[in-house]
Image (tube, rainbow, N blue to C red; front, side, top):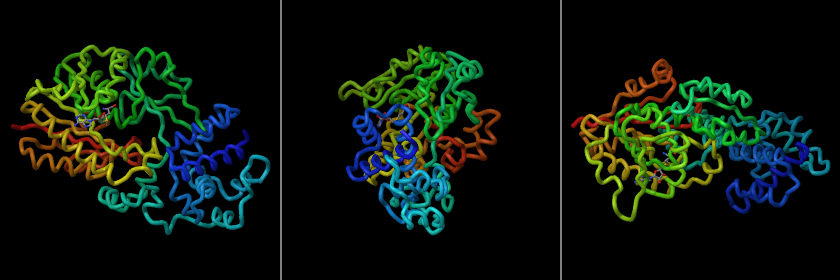
Length: 433
Ligand SMILES: C[S@@+](CC[C@H](N)C(=O)[O-])C[C@H]1O[C@@H](n2cnc3c(N)ncnc32)[C@H](O)[C@@H]1O
């Protein structure tokens, strides 16, 4: 397919998403089924265009002064891909399979309209109802922060130190141009272009042998900031598919006791295979069985309870721009209640002097700072470990990391703009009594 034909296809996919109100992944799949002649390169390029339109869904329509699928695609080409009016016109030449030529109004919009007068939620491409939440955290920086949260994310890997060393794994992935991540001593980063096909790391020998896992650098750092140590008793209370469990296991070097649990046993399904591939031998998985609490025996004994809390995932918008537009206020309410419940569950498990690491992949104050404040009010036996002490887990990077992150009395927040990671909040709470 020509670049122009791919553009026509992307307009079609965006139209389907908008009119049928279906998820982007589904619309792309349906398009692929109906156009079996399209090769994998074409599909990847059309998907790239579609995701980029969703990144710029509001600002592209504002720029074009038109909210049609075609306008959003044209506006995205300027805002996200940096094409000028002439370059867009060259793609839309009206030839077979190409989009229709630009109208006068479209040409003018591409040449002269800007986002200068756009409201914050439009310029920053986020749902209007979240403006107050983002203003509370970022103030006037919210447009710049949100724009970074809309930008394409790299593919980050964590090297599993139970199986290999970063330098060696990097050399084994040199064909993918993997580079060390800026903060995590365990991370490798693969930058992906706009039309990039999935690099298929799961088929690499280092992956099959358990030496790497796909994990955003922010998630790696969140695990490191818990400062889990060899010999400790660590409870991963919201283990899900085990991303944090695997990182914690490597930090513990096979020594001590690591218990992974989750309220939803289905979420835990992939963890068994992942732990065995990663060579983890000191982890115990406790899935719920009926009404009984699988962690009933853990009372006042844990050195560390990690809460990788259920959250809205606003910090991962750059990986899933579709989810951002589908998010509703009701979903936030549900997450807030779940976070409070899981914090309450964790408190009695911790031994005196032990700690809770409360982590979210959200940037919203209601899910982060306010949850910590509420918990401290209910549990005066806990205090916040000062963020400077928490950051010390990053050794030589601690000072620069503290300067980059958004530090509050409740904890540390990473954002795509500040740390080049997904958005993550980490608060470490120590039990004094
Ligand atoms: C952010 S996800 C966990 C991701 C996982 N830790 C990882 O790194 O791959 C949050 C998890 O919390 C679980 N959860 C929700 N409420 C819970 C509760 N009250 N107790 C324990 N787990 C809960 C959900 O089932 C979900 O799997």
